[in-house]
Structures are given as C-alpha cells and as structure tokens.
Length: 392
Image (cartoon, one colour):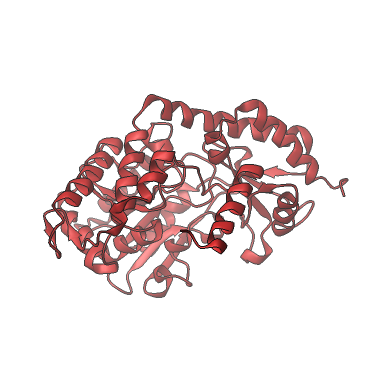
C-alpha cells in the first residue's frame, strides 16, 4: 500500500497537472504505456555493463530489451550507434565530455546568458569546473551569430564545439556550423580539429519527425533528453555515426560516470522511440509549431509591450522580454497565480538569473492534451492581459 503522505502528494500533483495550464518548455506528458513500463518489474534489475557483457548473471532477457531500445533509437534518428543508458541529459553531456576531452581542455558553446544549458560550460557544473569555457554570441536580433561563431572558433581554437540550446526559439543550421568547422580545419591545416557536439534535448521530437533539421549528418556526437518534445520518460540519450567513438562513449557512460542503468526507463525509451515513428506523432509535432504561432499571435494582439526575441519561433518555445512592464520573476509569479505555469529566463543583456528580463513558454505539454490553435490564441490573449501595465 502506498504511504498516505506520498499518495496525497501524487493526488495533489495530478490535480495541478489537470487544472493548470503547463507551459514549461522542458516538460511533456508521456503515454499511459510509458507510465506503465516505468512501474514494471524491469525496475528491479541491476545491470552494470552492456547487452552481452554484464557484470551480473541472469541478464539475458533484459539484454534484449536494451538492444531493442538501441535499435529503435538508431532507426528513429537515422544513425549508426546509440547509448540509451544515461539517466538524464546532463549525464549524457557529462559522458561526452568525459569521452572526448581531458581536464583543462577548451569548450566553446553559446553564451550561457543567451540560451545555452548549464552543462555547456557553467562554472557551477562539471563543464565549467574541469574545462575552460569560451562563448559565441547571438546577434542584435537574438539569432545565432554565425560570423561571431567563426571568429571565436579561429581565435580560441577549442577542443569541443557545442551547438544546441535550452532557450532558443529558432531553427539551428547545423550544416552551416559544420561547414565553418571544416573551413577552420582547412585554413589551419589541422589533422585534429574540434569535436562537434549537438545537444538537441529540446528539439528531439521535432528532429525525429523532420520538423527541424537533423544534426546527425553533421555532428560527431549528439546528446538529448527523451522527455521534452520527444514525449518519453525522463532520461538521456547519446547518438553518433563514427564507429571509432563507440568504445570511448560507451565506456564513458559505464563505468565512467554511472553504474547500473534504469532498465524500466530504457524500455520506456524504446516505447517512446516507437511512438515517435508513427504518423500521428509527426502530426503532433506539426501541431506544436502551429500552436506556438497561434500563442504568439494572441499575445501580440493583447499586449504590445511584450517583445518576442527573434520576433517569433520555429519550434515549441517562445522567449518573451517583459522588462517594459516587470521582471521575469514577477511575470512568472503573476501567471502562476492565474494557473499558468512557465519559467523566468535570462535573455541577451541579462547578467544574473535572479534578475532575468524574460520568460520562456512552451507548447508541447498542452498540445499533448489536445489543444489546437484556437485554444492557444485565446490563451495568448489572456497572457497578454495578465501581464499588462494596466491590469492589477
């Protein structure tokens, strides 16, 4: 029997998820099948190692499950190799750092204040404590500045280049970034040039359905979560094509940074990879894009003081500059009081997370719940009114 306190917590959380409008860009609602797998007996197995090479006996059945997940990941993303064991996106990133770099090497990523994830170089994480970090920037309109990317690459000569963002509403041109890196190699006559890593955690579902350019033809290694637009369980994923990286990456995950994998979660990942191959999932991802545009239109029609970074979005998220009216924290709090959940977010020009001028809003979760353009447009009108100067 479930403990009474825990049962009440689950009940309250379920009510909040049902009664609040969830616009957290990092969250989604997986299928009932995925929830069922997560609570299955697969959770009970402790499996250090990889299929066919375990440190415990009795893993013959579980090996088939993990290999199936690997095969489905490769099929979905059209790549040669996959590691489905990371417990999170952060651990997937840590494993790549551990596999390809040595302490003190230099990592180049987008500015952390302009959309990169903490694990791309923040001094508060492993990525900033053990590795040197340099940044490329957004341009004045909030788009990735490809000229600045090339300048920083040639000046700083990093060992690893990262693309992919935690808060960037536009499509990333991975081919263009790869071309710049290749040009850098030719210019400097290097036999060894920077590894190119893409963190596609936010856009994985869009990539899987070709709603966003895939990084797999261009990146040396791609990391992701499985629980955002991919709509799976909470977990991490690493993908690559070059067989020479296989031993480095696999041994970096285990035993490099973690022990036994969560086999219930791995089976649930396999389920989400299968679901993402179905035509209705592509329609879902296309609906996400339509809903994002409808939400923007509603906000614009309701409140002219709110500024959209890059003037819009190509994916599931919008970044709003609310500084003409209030702080990001105040906007987050005010929307939450009105049963709308989002998060404050740093934008270009901000110096501290505590002084954020923006909010990040996403459409993936409510699209899963069946919302279409009409509901999102009305929601946009409501958000604009709630964040109006003239409203109490």
